[in-house]
Amino acid sequence: MRGYRLGKKQKRSIIDIALSVAFFAAVASLDGFGILLNKWFWRLGAYLVPYLVVGWRVIFRAARNIVNGQIFDENFLMCIATVGALVIGEYPEAVFVMLFYRVGELFEQIAVGKSRRSVAALMEIRPDTATVLREGEWVSMSPDKVAVGEIIFVKAGEKIPLDGEIIEGASLLNTVALTGEALPREVAVGDKVTSGCVNMSGLLKIRVSCEFGESTVSKILQLVESATDSKSKSENFITKFAKYYTPAVVICAAVLAILPPLILAPASSDVWREWVYRAMSFLVISCPCALVISVPMTFFGGIGRASADGILIKGSEYIETLADCSTVVFDKTGTLTEGRFVLDGVYTENGFSEKEILQFAASVENGSTHPVARAVCSAFDGELIPVSRSEELAGLGIRAVCDGKTVCVGNARLMADIGVSGVAETARASAAYVAVDGVFGGRIEVSDVIKPDAAKGILNLKKAGVRHTVMLTGDRWEAAESVAASLGIDELSAELLPDGKMLALEGLMVGRSANDKLAFVGDGINDAPALARADVGIAMGGIGSDAAIEAADVVIMDDKVTKISRAVELSRRTIRIVRENIAAVLFVKAAALVLGAFGITGMWFAIFADVGISVLAILNSLKIFKM
Image (cartoon, rainbow, N blue to C red; front, side, top):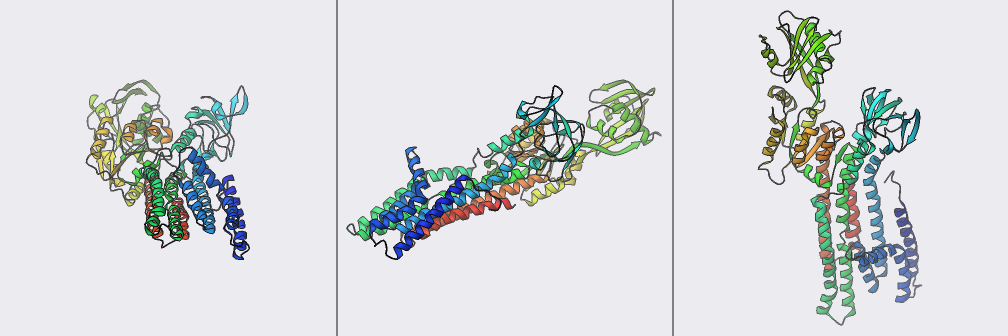
């Protein structure tokens, strides 16, 4: 376990084991040379020393649990088995059983500690202090004492303590702890920044936009800390299994120790000794700790591995759902596309030039927040014409006077309303139509930018075993079909109102088998109902939307579509490891129980069946970290 630092508990275990081995070696040597005179009380007393050194913690835990009403657990089984071995004179085996059990516990503790490291590393994003401007002075304080609107100062190498907007400075941000993305992000004045990122170079002054409890880092930590609270079906099965299994095997062991000797030879001490020995082996074999530890640890490891990649899974039950996912439904804008329009082309009529049309449109729409208007304004880098008497026409566009000319910029319906003829509608993109003094000047086509990794993300999903991909959007059919075709989406529904999107989702969920799960992927507040309704909701870029974080079961910390297939692959690998462990443990336990009951194997094989299979199952669980 390279890089793993032992805790106090593990160090105490190592000391106990080392002392017990030393005492056991000394006692076994004396016993081998006959120095103990083969007197049972001398031998028992000598072997009790290494036994109690290594086993006193187990005995204490068993006694404490019995007092608390928790009788049937692995500590109780180990005590009964080893005390029984001491009673029938199998002193070395009693010590070995307890010794190997403690060694197994040590490996389990180290393995569990390793599985928690990725989540523990995530917790390091929590900032300790914030430097805030108070009464003209910079003061260092806890981030939870900084108010919204105050100015904080972040030096190079420091974590950004609170969400906000840069008002001075430029820098590179390390966002790997939040998104799993190694490439630094460039930021400057006007950019929004999130807490938990590390300022790599310049000095930044940031105006705080939300309190610490509502900041990105707080939300992430709350999600990760509560992720293991919800149990999967497999974990619930193991919990119930252990609850009934442990008392059942204790009863079976008691029957095995008492009934056969009564039938075969009630008066023979050798027969009683043999069957009590078999019963003790039976108890050692039957300890369910391999399942009780390895299954939850595998799920926890899957959650931790996903968090290291910038994928927050709210609980192990959603790992199981993702593993069974056969259909993935996408929103379009902001999910598969960037929600950012760019210029596609300028098409002019009636003698107008491209520059004139762009200039008129940019002048009229300057300051508008409409995505198409912003794209038009961004595309024009010349001098704007002064505008007077600007009038916004709801649902149509804008009419204004530019340099004495009446300019109308809007959709095709606006052109029809003002009586402009010769308008050729575009079939594949969003457009702004321009008319000057009642004459059609042309149209400016813009289109939403498809995310660079969207096509690869859809392809990876299909490689991961997702059979059906669907896109639901409120956009026009022509624009939606263009995106769906370029990405390889299997099914499309467009021009949907919010309630229509929900109806379409409900239709996709009808008639599916119990093992065919549906995931919905959305990017914000308007997708919250669909995120909540799907078998598993996945929020893209959910760090910016409270509603998305609340409604979604999985949050992708950056906007990368490829992370969805990564989440599916991790989930399926996790479930595969869980099933491998359950199958292997149950097979070995069943075989060992039968062999031990018939006296074919002894205590040594019982030790392997318990401690050995536990360690192997835990080591198998650690494979999740190699993905």
